[in-house]
Image 1 (cartoon, rainbow, N blue to C red):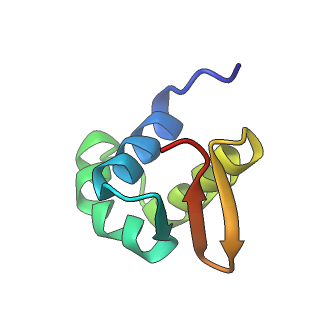
Image 2 (tube, one colour; image 1 turned 90 degrees about the vertical axis):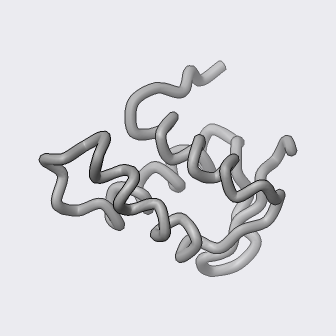
Length: 75
């Protein structure tokens, strides 16, 4: 079982804050300022969000529906 921590947990928390099973990647970008407060030295927040979404997909927390659209596997 994959343990969520660091950036992966932060992005997953943002997904949960959306409060829905299906979401678009661009919706996560609305959390950029929140993530910037947690990781102030990271100047590539969007890329980091994309990277963490891929990790969450690989670890079966998310399923890709189509380009830029995902679904939580357990809601």
